[in-house]
Length: 112
Length: 114
Image 1 (cartoon, each protein chain N blue to C red):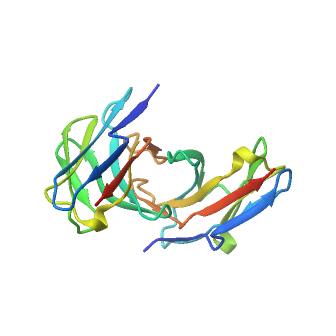
Image 2: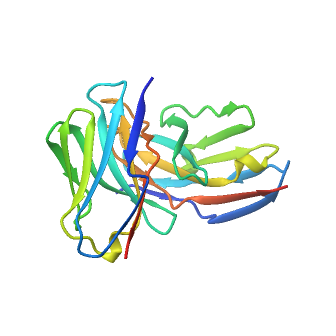
């Protein structure tokens, strides 16, 4: 069966510090991968998605970037965090050409 | 552009009551997919159901049922005999024919009191 992991689970970082969040998927090949942010405990905003290694599409211009160095690994980064980057970050995967997305446990980021 | 509206931000019911969560969508695609997800307090989104635009049959899964009506662009979710464990935020979502991009509604927070 497929499993999606995210780490860390929680993170407190000062403004201006770098960020690296990691997401890995097990039990499937060539997944589509997604990063979402949920602010204030409500709606989800798609940040990035990837249909293959090195292929990243950005949905919202922001202080963040994403990379996919391996087939089942998706990384969310920032060089300098802003207060507005605080939120709950969710990684998701779907089967290539599939539709429903399956979400990881999330990372709660607080920028102080 | 696609849009999903969940007009109910919060609903509070007493255990064993039935509750319906509303979802209205907008899309120009003739083929599209609708979804419901549950987000319990732990935060992880749990996939509940996917519906294709060309299949308007209602679906029932245990205490859960979904009513899809293309004529009103609605995809409502009913929980029968609600339980405290149903307390969560529920999201309705829409994807285009390619299925790669999900547009989420704002979510409805359901509180089931004992």
